[in-house]
Image (cartoon, rainbow, N blue to C red; front, side, top):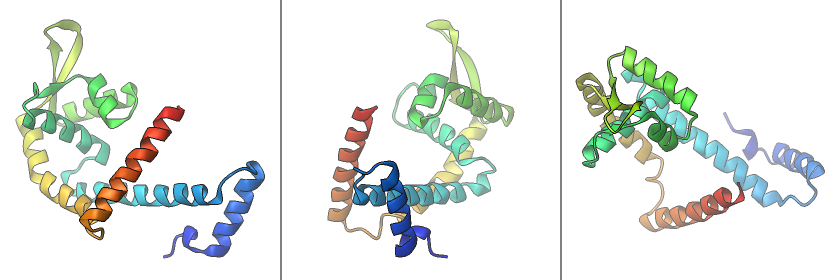
Length: 173
């Protein structure tokens, strides 16, 4: 099924409508944003599908990956919920729910932070570590497939352009 962005008539109609809301809108910027949204969602969906066998949501799996990465990088192997929510870009309330569910599944455990007993730290259990290890290779392979169509130079160019857009987008906030 073709996406509506690839239907010139519908795309032109959308652009005209958007320009009635903002006459100074650059039509190409709108097209880039819409295309970026479609690509971003497709890659996210691929990530979700790649961990379906794990029996977790993609967001829960990413929590486990952040903890696994912290261990593998020689960090303390533990993160507090605020660190995880910042890394994942979700609210602390949402992260609390993810952590509670993962804890109920026996994949993570909480411990009091020895330097601040008002805070908790989160770490992987053996079961959580095994689950991430089992699914990480396939997950990363699936994500990598999205970019194989690009040459190494095209990937570098895309990375530089995305970084430039990210810097502008975060500066506007």
